[in-house]
Length: 480
Image (cartoon, rainbow, N blue to C red; front, side, top):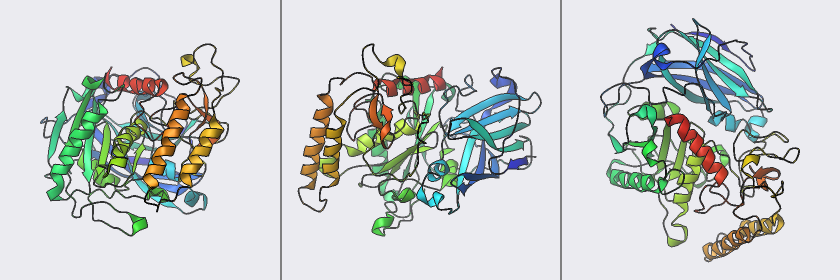
């Protein structure tokens, strides 16, 4: 059986373990274990309590149970994510698996609600290859100095009667959208739909095809297309559409997606983690993408949790915005990339502690005249790298001050946005990697590697060299 060892605030579990790389066949079977738990707390305090342990069902399309992750890279070397899953073989005291990830709770802890002492609980899951014998499952959290400390530990016997082995997929229709081979050497993305009524499934299928094609027109995904599998699972909702609390619109949608998550109007999340995991388990997956049946701008992306995107725009003025959102949010959830913009309103009050270099590979501080992506900066380019930031900021303010009720708002917004893009392209260090101030929701003190990037501006600009390299590193980790 599994036994809860510890679940308390800021608990430090002191352990020693071997750093030797684990062999998959020695420690694991070719199937998946899912550990569900509740994450509760406020700012500066968190408690994790175990919910359930599952042996995930067989994939009907492949006719077998399997582990879709890498069987070679079992120990995380990416150093991405606010949290770290560690799996210890209790017989040898060896760490045999680890993965970095982020969570809704981790983001919520930085909001005013958490700072005001209002406790919230969120349901979460971690996946691991199915162990052959008893393991210790540990979750660690980064402190504000980016050092990990253990906050939860439990021991799991994989043969225990307390491991739930029921099939929780139901009769949902799943499909191979793009299949390039064995999931253990591919990045597997499952696309789910929320807010699509039974009669709207043709629309969902068309959107899946559209965004699959879109993703692989963008580098570095285009060059690495053969390293991906794309799956879909159809989830009919009773109502068409998703919740929009600020408009008092409420829908009975299957996955619970909603605008106004964390009280941010355009942020689309769902707190129905168990339902999402049950449905996604119909196919192999490393990444979950949820398309929501809405033509209103919005989305979200949390590293190694899921991405969300509204499915289509209406009107010529905004016809490309959903394409921008789809790729941008996947940059967060898959690549571990941070937001580089700093002029938009966000829900967070203290997302990045001052003076601490963020773990995200594309958001950094300048210390002693250098930045973490310095190896990609050409000789002679100054750090920090000058640009006309004050003029750019004044144009951004002009957009925020526009009257959205005016009939010509879209035209005005488009005109100023074009001026902002032209300004970036007129800079001396345009098309050069540098350290440009303004990133990670902060106007000062945080830097981005490029003047413009998919993670910076609302445009169809591609990923900058630093972001593209980071994404490729993640692809390599899954596939090589």
